[in-house]
Amino acid sequence: MLFDSGGYRLAWSGEGLGQSRIVLGISGFEPTFLVGLKAVRDEHGPGLAALGGRRLTGFALVRFVEDGDWYAECPVVLDFDGIQAEICHSKFDELSISWNTIDTRAAISGWEWFELTPAWSSADERLEPFVGHELREVALLEWRPSGRDVAAGTLAVEFVFDAGRFHVANALDENSIDLGDTHPEFVRHPLASDAQPD
Image 1 (spheres, rainbow, N blue to C red):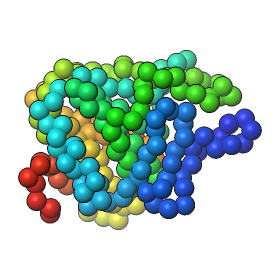
Image 2: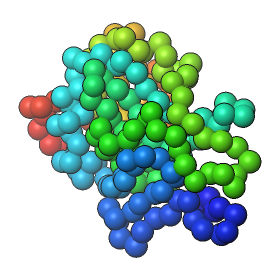
Image 3: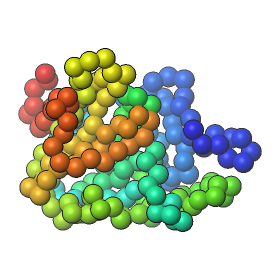
């Protein structure tokens, strides 16, 4: 949770699920958080599946200008030939996917009180190798651990290319970007326009 110098919250969650809103000074960012495989797949499965065959033409993350550190609570923005997927995790199990709403050319505002300056960046050594490559498949990854785990049921979004794969996961109230094969306790749910529910 971030507060400005007057004690006002820059980030907060609303009362009801799906009504959560995070305000981080990001132009156009109004996430709707969903929980669970069915809710996310029903709402965003067709849109994610339709990205298949498109090239990743760019991406944007929020980094602090002064030290280059990634501010992982902000959305991960991926551009596939003009279709922009905006992925943001919150809490233990909430996932928001929005489409073409965030203006990454606009300055991030409202941080004058803070000692660091957030700005959009297209630099990331994990994502850079995928730029220009065609997306082959998208899958939802569902965390199903063998033992008790507060994160059980958490979802990640996986993007598969000929050159490899990465997924944007929940790192317990922020995003993470992980490369390569997924942990064996993730269950993959490939997305396709003709996919049948599990």
